[in-house]
Image (cartoon, rainbow, N blue to C red; front, side, top):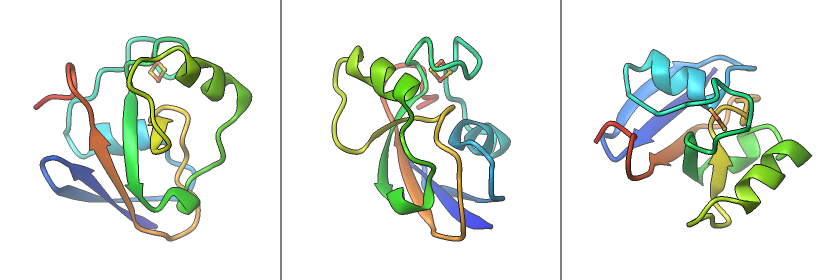
Amino acid sequence: MSLLTIMPSGKSIEAGEGTSLLAAILAADVALTHKCDGKAACGTCHVFVHEGRKGLSKIARVENEKLDSIVGVGSKSRLACQALILGTENVKVELLGFGSGF
Ligand code: FES
């Protein structure tokens, strides 16, 4: 289990190993657009991971290629549908802009 904190609301939820950030965020009742339903094809689930990056699965090629095509990507960027929670490290993510529910 990891504690996932979702900014800007600050809502927290416990997430089990192997859960995607997207699934955990939706389970916390926080809206996050995910147009391609987790296929790393749309980029709408782009989030920033501020803490606990080592507690997430590594960026695979398909995610990397999609991130390369998104405006505003930085070193903290992940696709929430591709980043899986591993281990027990606490994770803090920030939802971005349009479609993030805020
Ligand atoms: S839901 Fe489309 S890239 Fe994550």
